Length: 574
Image (cartoon, rainbow, N blue to C red; front, side, top):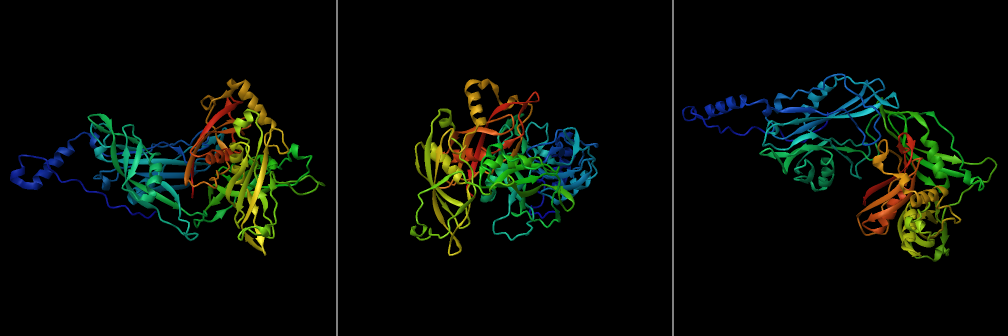
């Protein structure tokens, strides 16, 4: 059960029906007459319950076959709600095992009464299991149950908007919330503006700090627009939102069992790195989903990016028994180091960039002096700007950064660049760097460094590889071989996504970027480029992050193909 703050259900309006009994028997007779007329109205005036279809709980990567129900999904309309005048709902979320058996079943609603009613009825339902690649698998499902009032009857020519689907708002607890603090669900009443197409366009009468997230949630809902004389019209509908607050550290008081490895393939030392004999260590973060699959891999720390792809490829092939929370399969976040080393060869590694302007650190301004220099422990290569690569233009850039006592890059500024885009590209890559911080008398302190980078097709550092060049030739000479997303057998599914970094050194608190890229026959992003951006740094920050994303192989008629994709990204400074 979840705590609620919703007001009581509204009562019906006073009766005003005229009748010959009115003068003789007064208000009681008038109401009795009105009641008699109401009882004779057709069923279109009755409240109705809509039980939505079984849906995948996640927004991505559904199984090939969703669970299906063995029973007719019915929920009784509670008699206590007959007089309600606004819509309401209940959201069911459950996890089913590979036999369709219910492992967990959770119901949330603005009203405790509906939580109990829907919970009691739905726990009797039976399901067939989900299937992926012909095999029954554990699944996470969602159903919405919608309760519309009598005045929103489907066939009525004049009625308010009808609710057809709903979701609750998830948010993180405030940063100063003590760990393991449980925050009860909250119900917020708000007015939703709905256009004649049934889309939510605005939120009013809600707390200011929740207006934007509530609107984002309402846009996931579905409505039938209001009608006047049988025609759809814009309207405002007052509805309840359930706000669910999650702890920032994932602690929720549940007894947790970590995933257990079933298969774990060894990483393959990259062929192009064998001549160097360098040792590589790459920290890879990922999720183990409820099916035991590895999802959303990304590198969190790597001194030499030449090992990154091999590390991601190794971890992707691992398989687990899923982690458990109170005995129920749950998605678990994990992080592991992947080590690359040739037996008998020297250890060590080199970062991708060159530090310039080496000076006596004790001659620097106070606050930036150190006796032990910062050491990079995670680096990335910059992305060669697409237009310059296409036109065979080379150049150089130099960027100055400030490193915090925590080892994070907190400021980055282009000092010089032969073309502006080279400076933006280098700056975007440095913002992903992580350092062991500088020390002064054994205490972490700030430091400022300058890095330079040469942008050349075949330079000392392999910014552009042969696969990129092959893709560039295809784009120039055989663009017809690059498909559109609509021509694929199914939607693209991301399986590894590096988080997007907010660009440093900009005064903006938010920004937007639209980027375009190719996805090759192995699902790797190639040749990302900026299409538009509210400011240049946002475009290059987006390109830098997405350059290492990985997708499931794009297929047409079952064969791997190259596809062109575009992606809008929003930035907001937290």
